[in-house]
Length: 152
Ligand SMILES: C[S@@+](CC[C@H](N)C(=O)[O-])C[C@H]1O[C@@H](n2cnc3c(N)ncnc32)[C@H](O)[C@@H]1O
Image (cartoon, rainbow, N blue to C red; front, side, top):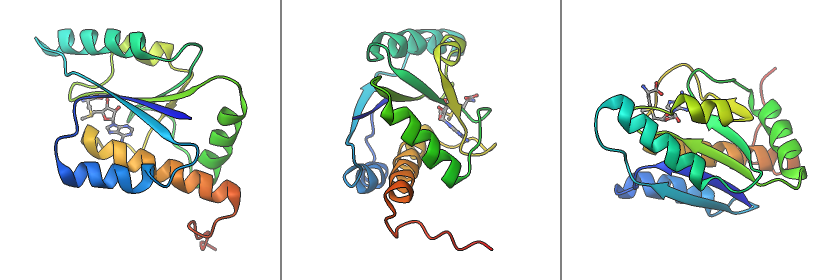
């Protein structure tokens, strides 16, 4: 099972539908844990949310922090990375920060970082984008024609 820990509740139906469209087709399934948004000044929000994320991590998880400053992959390389991660006995857990971003303690705990490009995306959209990329990664490794490697 994939795990996803994300700050905030998906209230908007369009954002939820986007996430569900890919999450419902994904194998293994993805378990989403939503954490409440922190309160206070920006640094305090980040610190509190960071603590909550670290507490919610499954034991011995391989942690992949979604971070715009993180590592970029092309879809093939990401597919290979996901295959390696799921083959280990450790749970694979992605984390998405809130409006203030991820606390440094979470980035430090992460085994890997994953950037969807240098632009900042709204955290609710990142859920759907990650679910799609995981679905694509699994389609590539299983030879499913969803991914068209049409580039010369
Ligand atoms: C609105 S962004 C936070 C922006 C914040 N200023 C920062 O420095 O991280 C909320 C979360 O969405 C995710 N996110 C946003 N853009 C991303 C990107 N390009 N690649 C990967 N994750 C991203 C990250 O987990 C981030 O913590």
